[in-house]
Amino acid sequence: MFVKSRIKKGPFNVELLLAILLLSTAVSPLATTHELLFQPGPEVGEDAHVDDWFGDATYNDYYLQVFKDEPIREMRTYIEFVELEPYLGSGHECLTATLSLFWYTGIQAPSPWLHVYRAAGPWEEDTLAWNNQPGYTGDPCVYPGPVPSEPSWVDIDCVTEIVNGWLSGEYEHYGFVIRYADEEEVISELFYSSDNYHDEKPKLYIEYQCTGVEPASLGVVKVVYR
Image (cartoon, rainbow, N blue to C red; front, top):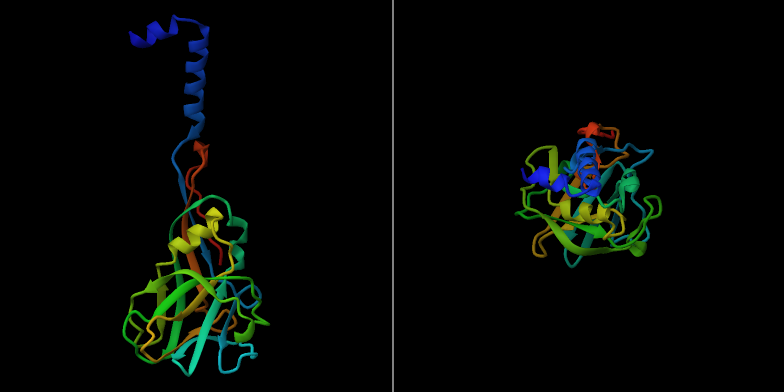
């Protein structure tokens, strides 16, 4: 009875009600979840490590290294997934993100042993060296898992906040910087790079939501890049 009394008040309310009913059948207010998987090869992949013993040397090699023997020597790894660029500043919400590296040799170290940061500026893998590196910024993503005992994937699933900042436009996207976590421990860990002939190249998996209103008929769309 309440709906009938509202409709009798005038044509404006009838038109408004019809518009609402039409809109509710055409759109869905629920965010849709999408997936992305980036695992570039040598033609697209951007990754390298730097070594403070050889400040001008470039290491665009088949492997990536994280090394620390403070205060004597340090190596850091830089990785940038350039395929992410179309999504930067989109305002999408990153639900989860995982950076995966294939560890193939190194020495045992207590957990945590890796910190992942945002790179503080642009760089190019062919020219990146210790003396021209942009450095890192922000709070680290702390990987708590142990050093593998045999060659295997290391899935760093604490980078969601970093990736979300790139998608939202809060942070500029210059990629990741990976370095040691413990000032007191000596570590030397090697991973396959995108230039390695093995299939186990660095990869970035993302689940995100389109937070705007979108057509209900679109449903869930899965997009995977390899």
